Image (cartoon, rainbow, N blue to C red):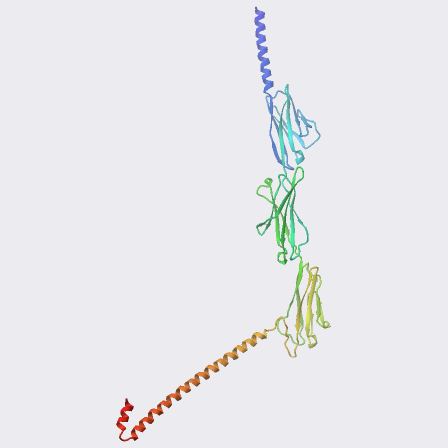
Length: 390
């Protein structure tokens, strides 16, 4: 009886122990956490354990290559490091992450039943500073085509063209490069010489950058034909003076040389040319003439002229700074016309006043004659006086 009692007690204890062990094995589990990291950064891949009893823990990469076996390195890739191995948490790090490291990392717990979870690694690729491509050299009067390019990003970057704080609408296109996306934004704008030196900006925005922007500035280099203008000398030049003419030139590209000449003649022997400046010393009448300044580049030619007249004792008359004689003649004509009008009005008023005086005088003589006639007629004096008085 005692033996049976002992056996029943031991059997009960064994059953409880077996059930407890089975429950412990069944409660072992593993959990994995998804990770998002910027390209070039460091990712932490964690496997959380429940009721770990020392079973085998294996971590594998997306290609199912074993990275660590119970904390021991199995793959020769120094970018992977085991930083923590405890009954509750196993953690490895991956440095210098690239898009090719993306995918599911397996946390496996080998017991009677294999348990595993997948930690998904996502890599974000922010855009670099975009590049600007120009299809052809900008020329005045034509359109320039500019393309802003972001070679790779993930997800796709957003590109915008900005000029004077205003967006320029463009044509946006994307190309899938496998793991990343390239984006371009193309604009076409007309240009002239006033646009030369204008700065346009291409901005790239991306979730990884937050409110920041990657910006590429582009300065327009518009080519245009030259313009030429001769700066005339101030004042009056007399014989023996020096003449200095300066030729102001614009153009892109700027003309490399300036040509000075005199129409239908050669430059005086005393003429000195220094770049865009012409100097003629000790002026004389033989220096009279029209002087030309000419310049050219790949897009055209331009010229300006200056006419010189030297008098003795004389003044220099130049077409660029001469007084507008037509205006002076007009003013003189206006003054003569005004004087003539004043004379006409004065004469008319004088004649009118004289005519009024003669009329009044004639009327007075008529009245005096009637009185005399009445006085000489003896019998009719009173009657005549009465009539006159009436």
